[in-house]
Image (cartoon, rainbow, N blue to C red):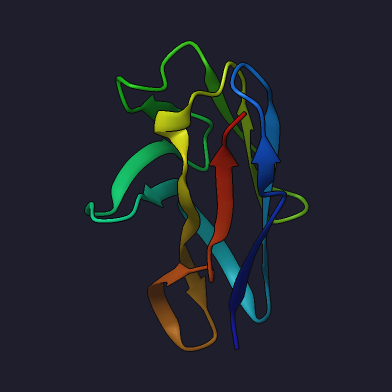
Length: 119
């Protein structure tokens, strides 16, 4: 069984920083693309940042220059460093990983972690 679990959310003031972590565990043979997505109240889930297993990254225009995605392939982890946060970044952040595991190739989602930017 494969699991993806996020951590690191919380309440932060505008202009502050947070670092999200995501760990994949279980019967994993290989992890392909990993990414962070977010969903604000009343809005659709959107892609924030993705990273390939070779380290190529893509960012949403709204977070370019403020957020940085990285991964540690040895630990099956992906991170999202978020700087200069604004209230518009308030959302539930989800980790996604495309994993080849014991049951085959599938896309796995974490349960989400709340990020609230407010004074």
